[in-house]
Image (cartoon, rainbow, N blue to C red):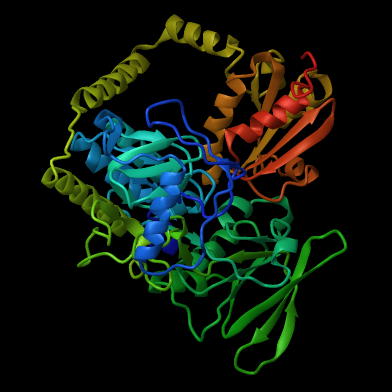
Length: 565
């Protein structure tokens, strides 16, 4: 393409939450920043009505923060204050982190976790990005975000994969509370992007993940969609990309366009119209979904917007590609936004209505919504923040050149070591890696299976462990193009490290082993299932907090009840 709207739209994962989160039921308890991580202890809510900044609201926010024990800059140790905090990730957030890092600001980034999407933004659920400079053969969205993230870390960005729950921009330094910590900062860049809209049909919740999805990349490879009739709602680049992608799995794809023509780029329209597996239905509203007695969607009720005629279309899957909503609810009333919730910036730049708070990416971009423009606005926000800090005498530069040089040296050394590893040395290293019980055993053939290893992959390992292992068994179902899966795997690795030999782990690629995924009832990826004594005790769809996986494993191991493992 044209990297479709979702391909290029994401300015960041929403490192925020506007609804009660896992920490929401835990409330507010304050501590001096720099002490042990603060965890909220009460319900935190946020208004869904977006409106311009109100002095009354800001005053109330200040009062609430004061009551909760938050501190202002008066009398505080400035060493506890961050120069710059970036909320959100994606091309806007990561680019801001790269530029701020190169300016020796050592930015702290909250790249998000669950609220508003996956860390890395909408590109994490995108296939090929064909219009990002420097990639003549194209690049997948998740790979592009992985590269940007590594570059951010190379220049000293401090990453926290957490949602920001509340901010207070009425005090100086600003106060930012995430699910795991509270920090203060002299400057903040908001790069929380936008999330995919839902259609809101009456039976949406009933068939969500049972036929209805907002992510073709994550859920398209699911067994129930293989060889089936599928539908996509929308007429822009996001919808056309999803329709084309789904032709890899479905027998036929119906693109339901509400208007008289598609809004997608000419290139994407051409691809769709020339694909014999796609039928475009113009002037078509999706009124509702219908299903069977097993709770799975089997069709849609459609209405022609011109004639008013209604009909049913037999499809097993419905995917949304109907636009996005900005992730601005968590700071509603503190930074000026328009009626739709997009941040209002000054003179087309990064400055917001609050001095020291800057916006980047889709959070304020209603027109272009491309990966490259989001990256450019992240650059502008970082340079604006640096200039602001300098003008206020708040610039605290930390030399990151040594860290970057060390990273380069490490990469070079790894390359030289890899080139030099020959003959017996290579065999020895391979043998050592295979023997380590904490390494993944990629069971290419049954003869290589090691029951003592913690991590495994593939259906042979799953069958073997299911029948022979006395440990708790965790199974992760993933897809080769699933961006959220790439973020979940290292998180699960950290959790597994805490349990040693108490747990076995198997990863199943639903494209490589579709019959296993189908038998397990997997409707989308990532999906984690936990077994004990051949009984499935828990299913966790999507990406959860590490705490939730620990709770499930602890319960399966009998730790909650104090039973010896």
